[in-house]
Length: 227
Image (tube, rainbow, N blue to C red; front, side, top):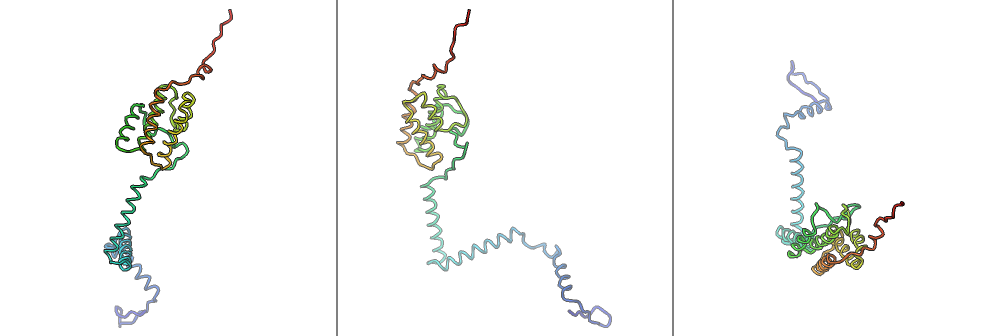
C-alpha cells in the first residue's frame, strides 16, 4: 500500500497491507463510532421478526388465497386447540411420592367440606364435588375419633383404616377413594352419578355405628393387687 502527500517533496510512503488493515479495525472499533448501533436485544428481535415475516411470506405464496388463506389456517388451528383444551381440561399433575395427600390446604371441618361439595355440585363441577365429599367423609371419621388425624394421609390409606371399624362400608370406602384418585391424579372426569354415590356413602357412614371389637383387646387389663 502506497501513500503520497504529507511529506517534503511528496515522497511516497509504503505501508504494509496487514498493519494498515489492523490499524483501520482498531480505529473503527472505538465506541465513538458505535454510539447509535442497536442493542444486542434489538438486533435479536429484528432478526426474529424478519424470520417471522419470511415465514408468512412463504406460507402466503404456498397457501391458496395468499395472506387471507394464512389467516384462515391460523384461525382454524386456534379453534382446534381451544376445542381440545375445553374437552380435555387443564393438564393434571402426576402423583409423586409423598405428594398425594388427601388434604391439600389448611384444616377444615367435615361440614365445611360438605358445603364446598354442595357448591361444586350445584355448579356442575363434579370433579371438585367428588374431592370435597371424600374429604368430608374422612374428616367426619376423624371428628368421631374413628380415625386419628394424620397429615399426609392418602385417600386409599383413609379408606383402609376406616374399613376396620366400619367393615360394612369397606367396599364403598375403597370405591370412593379410587374415584378421588382418578379425578385428582388420573386425569379422569367425574359425573353426577359418581358424586351421588359418594354423597350417599357419606350419609351412610355418618349414621353407621362402628365395630369396637378391637377396643376390648386394646384396653388395659387390671388385676387385683396382692394383699
